[in-house]
Length: 238
Image (tube, rainbow, N blue to C red):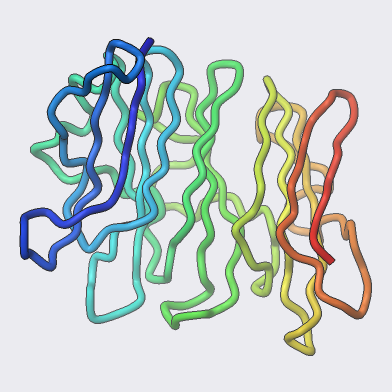
């Protein structure tokens, strides 16, 4: 009967500062408890995932409003949003920690693993081509597969793979698809990579090109992935 909601709004009336808010309902949405502030701005693109009383939240935080540098920040709660780690009185956890533009976080979980995907540019220049980056945690986001500050796993292995990726998780199986940007700029293709061990290894292996699902002279965009194991299904706009 728990319902969790997140959104972006102004921190105060007539204030230009944005904030990510969170509210919860314990009666299937009939009533809601007072709002909480997940992060103060400039912030946008909140992402929320929940499993019973476990609540995970991520958002994009623009640390320097005068540049395009942005980071993926994160908190988690083990009691349905009553208490958070880090506490709401402290800054959220910086997951990406890059000098570039981090955007479009996606949270998912399966078999006691928490997965976080996002887009990360090759520099802090706006509209720079993005990579698809990835981290996972086995303790609800307290620690991660690589220590924070180290480069996250790069699913795309190129500097011209655009996002947002579409990610589907079922148990230990992960399927990820996205579109790249080629020359000429009107040409895009759908790429795909999968894991059957919770992101420890990938097919194709990381460091080499992902599988081309489409390869034509036109524009292939907006991939959608579905799992019906052992089958992967991919649809896109062409």
